[in-house]
Amino acid sequence: MFENLESVLLRYEDINRELMSDSATADMDRYTKLMKEQNSLTPLVEAYKAYKKAGTDMDEAQELMTGETDEDMKELARESYQEAKKTKEELQEKIRLMLIPKDPNDEKNVIIEIRAGAGGDEAALFAGELYRMYVHYAEKKGWKTDVIDFEESGIGGMKYMEFMVNGEGAYSKFKYESGVHRVQRVPVTESQGRIHTSTATVAVMPEVDEDIKIDIPPEDYRIDITRASGNGGQGVNTTDSAVRLTHFPTGIVIYSQTERSQLQNKNKAFALLRSKLYDLEQQKRHDAQADLRRSQIGTGDRSEKIRTYNFPQSRVTDHRIKLTLYNLSDIMNGDLDEIIDALTTADNEAKLLKMDEQKQ
Image 1: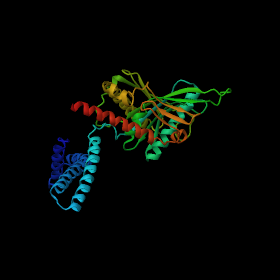
Image 2 (image 1 turned 45 degrees about the horizontal axis):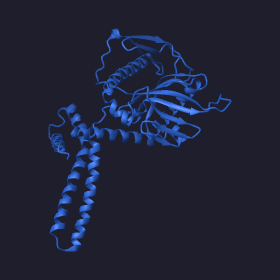
Image 3 (image 1 turned 180 degrees about the vertical axis):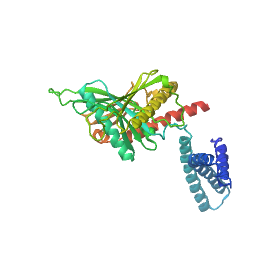
């Protein structure tokens, strides 16, 4: 088991030797890449070394158990053997998780779109509550949120909200939120106390790095400069600084108005367009793995119903992993770790299953 890790260990040692050489800093770009690779390999290498040591400890204890005549020493050897065996088994599972192919987007910032769905004003109120839930969750993680675009409803809800979460690993947590979220409750305007069902759709996209090539020819888009709209205040300007960016091949229209200058809004609009185009490509690749994901945590499609928030019962159910919790108030205040951790575990189990099938 873990035969390929010997080559990882050799690579790690090669990197260390090169970093310690006199010429290491002659090429700073290469030095930076080597440091990054070393940091990424260190946890795996350390776990593998500990795994090998546990195996050696088992062998040594086994020899004592068979060769020692003193019963007290044999008992100590048996205890050492069992302890080393337990350690080795724990490290084996830890390494298996480390060997799961990493999502290259996991460490990136994330762009989230929330759209009110079926349910009219109640859906818009729910969309606004989802936005606040995600903002609270981001705050608990120490991440920064930045509004890109929004459209309010007349009763304090949100017809549409687009915002960015800036923080290391943000995408790894929020990526499970894509899909249809459903709310069940009695609206304020309901005089007969009937429970209504409304929906909101969430789309999650990683921010695209500058080094990822996304070709956007000038003939494929149009830029319109308009006056920012909204309720005024510090977040919205009253000058002609808002930018509407239209991408003809996809029909994507981006409206950026939250920055103070036309150039800043233009840069933000193009950054968002690049992320949307990248996301479209990712969705195409994702379809090839849909069967596996459907059996574990759903397909990830934007049209898939993923979660229900039942206010009368204070219940939240994630349909992908059949998880039901009865702490709705805490969840709406941003306590999402229990749900997201369970989804991450299910995702890892699916990937491990696939890895085991490929070995057979």
